[in-house]
Image 1 (tube, rainbow over the protein chains, first blue to last red):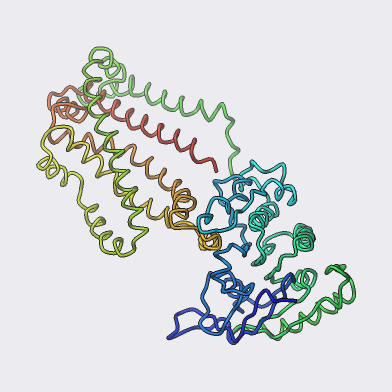
Image 2 (cartoon, rainbow over the protein chains, first blue to last red; image 1 turned 60 degrees about the vertical axis):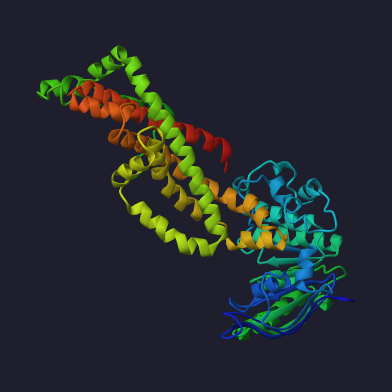
Length: 257
Length: 251
């Protein structure tokens, strides 16, 4: 299977090249195309930073990174990346429909392919059909995140980066959105990098889970979840194999913290 | 303990009753207390001026209205344009914002004679004074507003490869609108103050000139009528701003 992301000895930090504070140091990571990778780690371990480097929002200090066989900049210019933030980052003056349609209105000039307006279809898919004329402040937290996901999917990205998207939601809503996200992933075949603080969420969603340690950020655990799951990354949350894997991840996370 | 909220009828009725009680006390209590009419004329005497000298009042309202409106538009427009320039060029902002800040510390009463010296005695200096007085709050608020988009919002636009102009029109400007309107509300009152101050110093027309003439002639009923009229002008301008704001900002 070709790889969606290949990072070699990746150094990322702040403060410039002279006196850098390294957030990620010597990170090696290969992510297979079409896979679902969960990224776990304590605060400050560089989980979000890694997503920002992949999305070309941050330049690495050293090492190499290739995304979908090209540089992060090329991939961003082609709009092959979708990003979902922890707070939905909806524009409060736009209706739900217009928020989802944002990628049609901006950044089109530099794009060679034409993005189709799939907003109606995506709104239906995310269960937002009746809410399309509402403003963001009229939505619940879960509905806002659904809008953010629909917006990220509008350009049919090959790679979806999700930075703790369900972190602020209650558990029931979070579980429901987890299932919806898995259904979307199975249908679209998009590669997903999913950052979370929750061990249960990481184990349930990911075909593979990596645990990062802080100061500086590096991979301390890389767990293939497929042996614990059925075909299509399906599992039950209370399955003993999944619970055992979660205990394994918890130990790694405790050592990393 | 928190008090229970008022019913909708009461929220309208109470301010009306409050104003009526003060007007009644003014009308009947002040003369009883021996306050002379040349210091505080009664509300009916002031209302009488509106009946007797209506055309005089309107003739003086017109220039003030034009000066305040023109100053409001020009001052705010200049502030918005300069704010746009400043947020797109940190160098210009660092070089010139302190000078603008210094300029703002000059009291408008000290600045007005200079403006009149430069622009003469027509309407122009009054418009300039009204514009100057509106300018600074809008500039500061607009700079803050244009810079108020969150890091995540900027990153979202960056992921979408948005151009600078797309970021301006689709993110920075809509983000700035609530702050722009709060300064426009303030400017709606200060524009009228600016026009009146300008008329004090060098004019024989306008509500400012009327206020000065009525003061020197001890026509206190006319003075109070001019005050009521200038305050009504500010309120009308304020309501216009609120009306436009409600149509534009729905969130």
